[in-house]
Length: 217
Image (cartoon, rainbow, N blue to C red; front, side, top):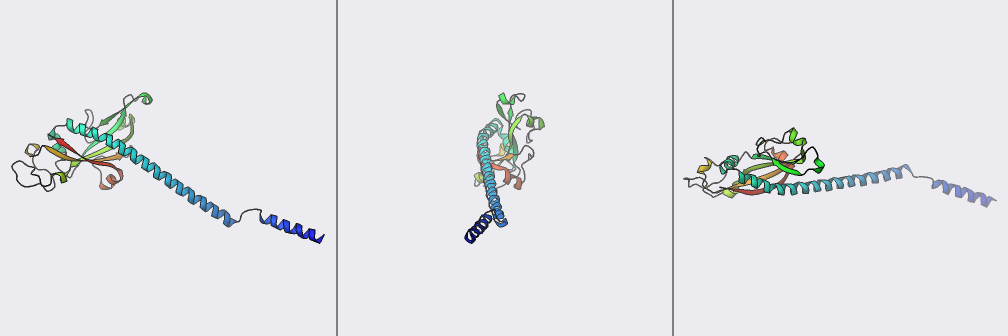
């Protein structure tokens, strides 16, 4: 009988020892879960950011053809005026707008820009245009690509070679048949569109694409 009582006592103690987790075990488990979730959230954020960047760059590449078309349509004198100062980029805004804003689900998108008739040059789309638009606004800075002109004689009647800086004089005094133009494309949140060429800090954050194009006479 004593043996049976001892077995019952032992069984009861063993059974009680398996009754739950200690506070330390619970805290460790919670810590592991928290670390895992934090890592997963960070990974998802990184993936989302990369997907958006690829989407922006793809759009920027398609805009480049639009930019070249815009430059071709403009007189050489106008484009020369845009970039001659070298230090102050000329700004063009691009955005996609529904052709039929009353029924966007059955309407195609068309790309508009601030150089088209009816819009203000160098200014972003107004509130009405934004309401009819889809996606982000892209800001394009155009400036003189000075590196392509180094060593060239850029002014008629002047034998000195260009080193850097603004192009002096009028376009009629410009000696070359082309203008090298640096194209910088930035993505602009609809709620916070930069007006003008932007600061170095903002441009670094919103830059999605750079390229060089040429305007011929």
